[in-house]
Amino acid sequence: MTTTMTPELYWTILTALVTSVFWLPHILQRIIEFKPYEALRDPRHDVDTKADWAQRAIRAHTNAIENLLVFGLLALAIRVLDVGTPATAFAAAAFFFSRAAHYIIYILALPWLRTPAFLIGFGSQLILGATLLGIV
Image (cartoon, rainbow, N blue to C red; front, side):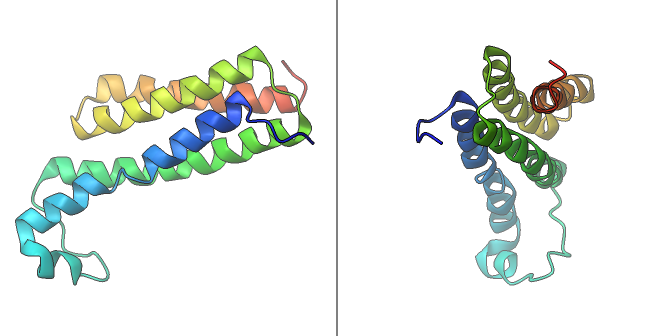
C-alpha cells in the first residue's frame, strides 16, 4: 500500500472536519438563550432551545454523522483496495458538497432542496459501493 493521499480520502477528511463543527451553531444558540452555565450544565440535553433553526441544526449534524460513517468506510475500502477511479473521486467531492449543502438547507428549512442534497450524497455512497463490488 502506498502512502499517497487519494481524492476519496481527501474529500472524506474534509467532510469529517466540516461535520466536526456542525454542532457549533446549535450550542452557540443555547449559550445565547440559556446563558453559559445553564446551557452547559444540561448533561442529558433534554432542555430544547426555543429556536427552531437550532433544533434543525442538531438534527442535521446527527444526520451528517450517520452518513459520514457509511461514506468513510466506503472511501477507506476504496483506498485499501486501490480501486479508485475518476468516478469515485467525483463521487467523493460530490458527497462533501452535498453534505455541506444539506446542513445549510436543513437549517433554513427548505425541504424541497434538502431531499435532493441528501440523495446526491446517497448516490455518491452508491457509486463507491458499486465500485467496490465491481458493478461499475
